[in-house]
Length: 437
Image (cartoon, rainbow, N blue to C red; front, side):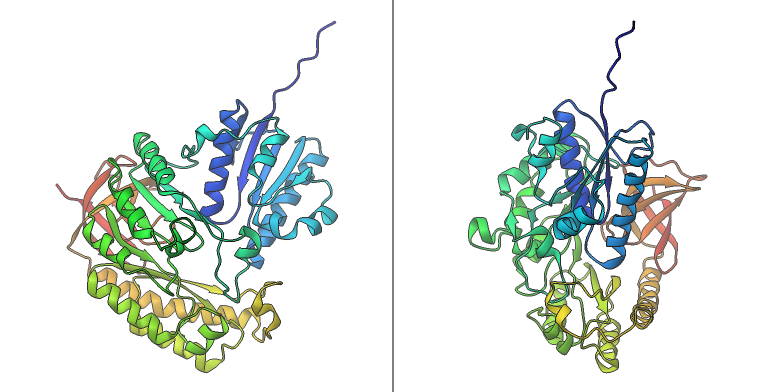
């Protein structure tokens, strides 16, 4: 009689939502593999018997997508295609009790800071020696670096503090070590992310210490680009812009979510600033670095936004001429401060306003891109897609900004390498270039 062989567990991690979630999944993947567990990220293989879903709970659409994904794998479990389904991340943190009642087929729910508890399910230990090391789930030439966790801001519309907790900075030494490890493994671009990057260091060093962190990271050999995301405008530390100006490997790029262009709505949002102060800040930044690319995000349809306030936001966008802009529709999130306000606008009206803002931005982006024709830029090649090599300038971040398309029938570029590209044509959101020299 043959002895029955036990099938070895294979774990597949599915990530929903933002780059901060992606970093958490990469850390989990590193810890599982460091414990000798066969794990992968978003594998297409059909022999994964344990699924971990890292959920997003930010707005309605993201929540629905996370729930649909959970139900898909619960269904697979009931068909005998997988053995276990675990759920972690923001949605799980925020709605754990409800989810346990509604989807009891899930084997366990975990919060956003429950990594050791997840590892226990695999009889694995949290390996401190792996801190700073992270297996990347995409091309190694760029990497997100989460410099802090959580948020202390009181923004009316935002549920992040409910899901991610209060602000906790990571020590500079730990981040420098991580950057050195990444550089040794071929990473050329670091994208600094946090819920609020300008708050960095207040808890550890009793002062805003983002400028010092960026300066120290800029010393790491092999890191060609450092890119700053999610900089809160209120109390913005201008020494960050000075470091950006002084250090050539810090991208002249700033992601600063302003959220609105009407002082009355900013007050309702509890942003601690005014339209005038925001405009003054943008002018000050551009005075120091005229060539900087500023990315911002705005919310259409927040309670208190009437026609007058919306028009103020349109005027704000037309005046500021942001290089990059994203627009979200307001999502009425329970347990947030804004949930007590009347959400008067229909989803259709909010979407119409968002579309109008993006139409205004399209023209601004088109005009700015036309000015780039004939100029030569350093471009980092991200991928080959269709008949083009696709890359970015220092003024563009991954997945959200302009791309430079280089004809693959005329030129060969290696993914992860820098090339000099002369811009020959431009649309609203794409640049076309020839390799120069």
